[in-house]
Image (cartoon, rainbow, N blue to C red; front, side, top):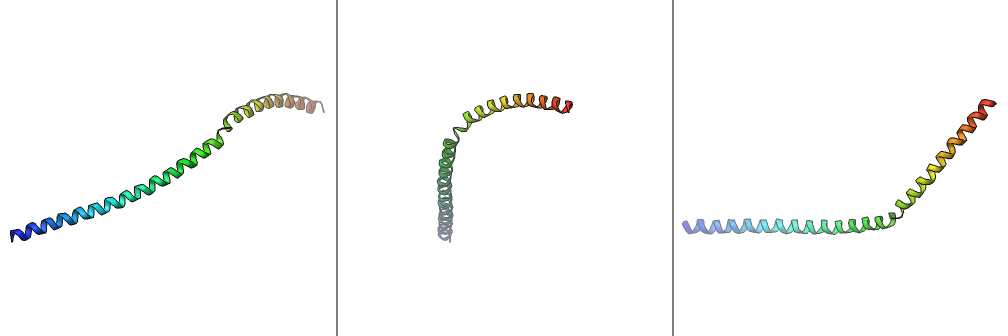
Length: 87
């Protein structure tokens, strides 16, 4: 009887270890797929970063020009108000 209990315990432990190994293999496969997807995302983000690198200096130039235009529009608006008041 004691031998039977020992054999059943060993079988139970073997089944437990087998199930644990199967789940760990499934998790490893999922993590591998996630890693591949993240690599693709990283590649895409780097491509976007490269394509957008010229935006920063251009925005600075556009803002400087818009500041000049805003100053000129204030003068034009003042002239238009004076002309409207005279009419």
